[in-house]
Image 1: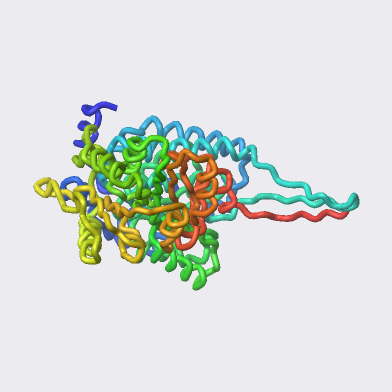
Image 2: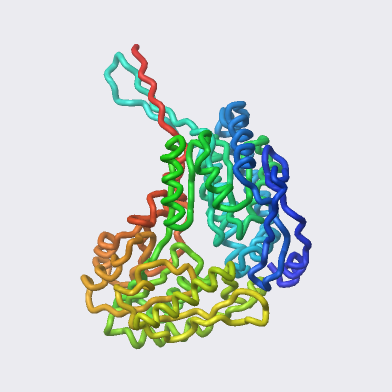
Length: 494
C-alpha cells in the first residue's frame, strides 16, 4: 500500500449508487435519494438510494425465492465453500479500492481500515467457507430399536443491520456464517457508510453467488431498517449498534413474526492496570490506541481506564506521551494515526460529553476540542478526563468517540467494583504479571471479552459479544453458526 495508490483512488468519481436486489443494481421504487457527505472535508461524495418498506419487501421476496429454489440453500456444503472462497479472493484483490472507498465514506484512518475492513472481511468469509463442510450433525445415544438424528438446517431469510464504524468487518461477521449455512440475506447498511457493502454485493455476484441470495437495501434506519425488522418473512435479524435501536428491534420482533433477534450492542469497557503490569510503557501505548484509534468509534474501545494508585503518576505520564504521539489528520494519509469523526452530529455529541463531564467535576487533562476546522471535516483532539467517579455519566454511558475517562483504584476489590459499575459488559482488559490475579479478574469482570496484557487482537476463532445491556448476540467463531441454523430431530423406529 503506497500513498500514490491511495491518492489515485481518492480522486475517483463515485457514481450514484442503487440498491442491490436479485443479483443486480436497482433504483429505489420511490426514486428517493440520500447524499453521501464525506467526514474528511464535508463535501458530497455521491448519493445512495433511499430505500423504504417497498424496497425491503422486494428484497425479501427475492431472498425467499432464492432460498426456496434451492440452488444455494440445498447446495452441498462443499459447493457453497467453492463460491465463498472465490468471494473472499475477490475481496482481497480489490482490498485497497474498497478500503479507500470506505474511508471516504466514514473517516477511519486508512492503515486501520485496510486491515479491519476488506482484509478482515475476506478472512471471515474464508473462515466460514472452510468451516461449513466440517460441521456435523449428531446421532443420539438411544436404545437399539430407535435411531435419533439431529440435523442442522438453514433458517431461511436473514436480515442484517450493521453500524457505520466498521460496516464491512461487522457485516462479514454476520453475512459469512449466514451464507455458509445456506441462508439468503438482506443487508440494511448504515446510511452514513453504505458504499463498501454495496461493493461487497457486486463481488459476491461476480464470485457466483446465485441471484437473490445476497441483497442490499440502503436507506434510513427509521424506514428501511424498521421495515426489515417488522417483515413477516424474515426469519432472523442480526444487529450491531446502539441499545436504543436494539430495544426497538426486539419490539419489532414481538409485533411481527417473533423472528429471532441477535443483538451486539454498546460498551463502556474497563481497562485495568495493576501495579505489577509487566511493561508500563507498553501498557500505556496500547491503552491510548485502544481508545483513540478510529477516533474512539469502536464498540469494544477501552473507554474507562483504571490505574492502581501506586503507579498512577508514572502511568499517566506514559499515557500522555503516547497520546501526544498520535497524529490526528486526513485519514487517507498514511502518516495519520487517527482519522475523522463519522458525522457532525457525532462530533457534537463527543464535545458535549466532554463538557458535561467537566461540569460534573472531571478534569480535562488534554484534548476534547474540535481541530482541523479549516478542512471542513469532523476532527477532534483525543480527550483524557481524570478525577472521574463511578457516578458520572461519562463513566457509565457510551460516548463512542475519542474520550477516555480515568480513575485510580487501591486494590483488587476496588478495581472489580469500579469495572462493573456500568450497565454494559462488552469488553475489558487487565494488565498484571500475576497469573492468579489474571484468572480472578477474568472471572470477576462482567464482560464477554477479557483481554490480559493486551487490548484487542482477538481473531475470528473466538466469539465476540457481551453481558448485561451489551446484548446477547455472538459474532465470530464456530458459535456464530448457531444463530443462522436450526436443529431438526429425526426419530426413527427401527
